[in-house]
Length: 315
Image (cartoon, rainbow, N blue to C red; front, side, top):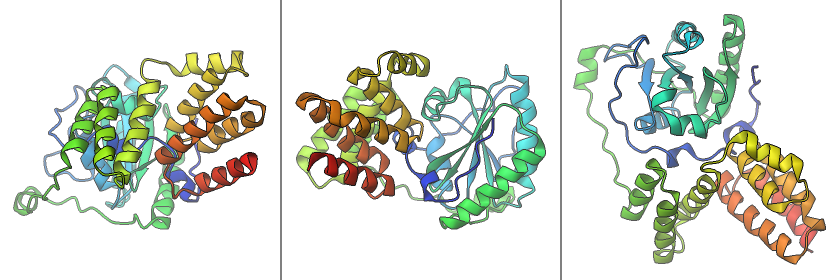
């Protein structure tokens, strides 16, 4: 099933910030059975959990199509060929990043991929769902055209030249700004899925500087990942459907919705429940909403709407 790309900025917010999952680009090995781009190819690249930071940065200049594939999936390999052909036809206005799902479990979780292949896009570092499974070329081409329009609306309309090996070698290496030590510690903890350690590092950073807004957002995201760790989509949704009055079950499905980009659904679920809750329940919902506001982004229009609705319920 394809997902039409929303025409507004709403498409660019609402999932877990993928930059918390990966940090620095590392050289990825070539997946078995896949087409391997040349060392100078900048239009079609390979990535995984450890190398995804560079893909995120690239998406601030040009929209990136991310294909989650697997060597055991024949549809994946067939789709990669079609994606490469259609991306190259856009003359550097799109990039294709192929991620082997078996080597990229964090990306599979972050994108809430329920099937292989799954294709998503990145615009300005934010995920935009595209489709799962095989699709006809004309459907993919239409989605790519919509993606280019979305990128243009958000100032992401650059072009990448394929280049040649000599040009690549002569280009200066980018200078990477080091992270503050506690942020570095938190990123490394998230990479090894130790979300408690990541949250502890962010709390220490906030204690040292209460104005560290990146640490505040990072703590909210680490807490969200920690709450979802070890749980499956099906069990969360089944538990919530079976117990609509169980606040803990509803909080779990809200976390899942936010992680998957269904922000309006998540906020509406909590705010609809709010009036019927006792004082302790309302306190838990307020606290969770405040934390999720940080995950989504406090400047997001959906957060402003939810804040107003919460205030009307409180006062």
